[in-house]
Image (cartoon, rainbow, N blue to C red; front, side):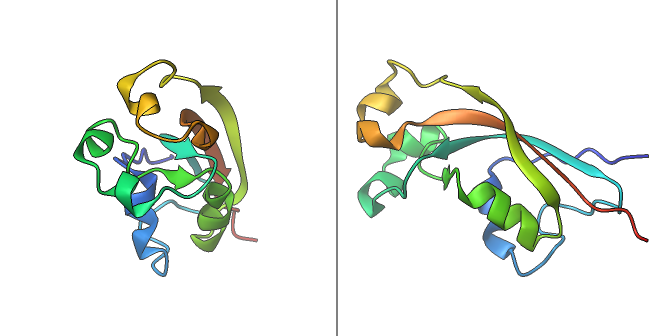
Amino acid sequence: MHRSIETHSLGERFAGVGNPLAIGPVEPGGRLYLADVVVQRELTEEARSNPDLWAACVAGALVESELVTLAGKCGFTCGQVRQRFNCFYDTTAEAKVAKDLFIQSVNFYARKEADA
């Protein structure tokens, strides 16, 4: 039996990355599926403190390359982006940040290895 994990922002949940239960307990052999907003480079402090970008779920976004690393620090393996969505195309959120951030949503998968 696998548990479902609800997250609001992976970045916020991984803030306690020293604690492998930062996103909730997943038993060995369990899987993690999540959707989150990512960017391609770190946001500026100005962007991170912009209320409009917080409301659009952009200000708390992780750099995409951090997903696998952070999942690994929490005991997950095989982390990979399975699907991408350009859901911010031509929106006010996209207009407020640099184009090289390429804001997008992703579906991410990782698994917890089964005990030997």
